[in-house]
Image (tube, rainbow, N blue to C red; front, side, top):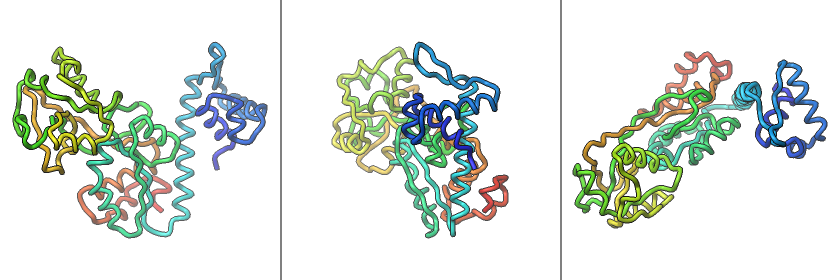
Length: 305
């Protein structure tokens, strides 16, 4: 259904190189150029320009790209629906905290229907949004920031941001003054992680910085981090879900810090995307499948299948 020239356009948007686009699509470079010129004539606007020999997209190309990605995703889901024999098949993504510590029971409830199928990718926010734009996942569950002008969203849940330590640590289950935390070893996620950024913002708001801790140990794995916490090797700050299921860990709070962040469904602005989120969310608190009612409510031409 989607015009091959639009596929050429989306590939060029992704690699930003005419020669590489031609190679990927097994075309000649002049053919790629012809496809782009056709779309420019059709929509009456310039889609690409060169800035000091670097190819850049115009604002019109950005808009066309967003619309084309939505259409491509809808066509992919339509093909899947036409070939589906029963149950539901979802491809979803989740950021690290959500994927490793939050959605396990939710996914298990969804799989209680033996005909349902699901694949889950746990990645950082940037990778998930790239997969979302490329139509490789139906929606993402994100704990961090995202471009609300480009993606639709819906609240998944609110989650407290707390201190975590060993159950035997002096801070366990207590509220402590800010000046008590500096003498501890801080176990911290890698640069760019959401939890690291939240902690940095909290400290900055109180005229402090990460460098004031006695020692910082960077750990990209939550599994290793919680094991180190259990061994009383340091403290960390993370979402409550990270420590909730581990009896060797305890929460603590810093005086004046009452922090809660939202986890969101993030998805393309298409009827099927909205439907996929709505259907999956229905399993959050129940193993029962209310899909028939949902499919009656949706306006999607594919979702009602």
